[in-house]
Length: 322
Image (cartoon, rainbow, N blue to C red):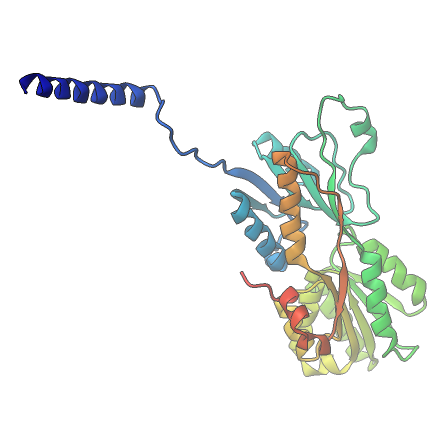
């Protein structure tokens, strides 16, 4: 009996000793810590609030793929400089809402560019001469701004009297799609177009001059900053509204949709920004993990008026749940 107890103690001691040795040599299986990817999202302006739905899509995909999103608004650096800086700082991947002047050279980090369909943001000459061993990602999500302005113009034609001035408000002609949209409107209404580029101060002056002239006009706003400024100006005085016979804009936010619902805005051309953001992250992860290939995406546009806000499918696109 004593011998049996001795054997038991020996086995117990050896077991404890083995467990200690194994734990010290990392032979015990441990749960692998999932990798957190660092991804930079570079916008095309300073105000991130104009991209709420896009950001919701990005955040939803980031949660799924274990991504830490670094949101970057424009300051005194160009988008090209920001891309190069983020790569130097160790970003695993980059998503950028391209302005028209963006030209991407050699970059090792995977990049997804949200851009105007007819704009080439990649410097093909420099990329073509690169070392073949360098894998250069050229993924894009394309937005057809020509189609957007054509849809808006069709809605405008239904109300236009044929002679009133047509004001076109833009904050920055270098924003994606704006130059093409402006050219399209000039080709249709060359004698009636009044282009106003600037910010709230310039826009207010133009509208006040219109009121003082006792004329009425139709308005196109080609970017979210301009639409925001125009809505605030018109909301400040019912007299201003009386001189606007139609207001058509590109890009949707909750604020703009509320203005569409109350009759300030007549029509909005937009797209599913939630899907745009989600797809950008999925496309980037396909490159990072090299698990599958995703071809470039052409986004579908939609024209929204007050009546279409009653459509549940459209409401789900315009008001995605967090």
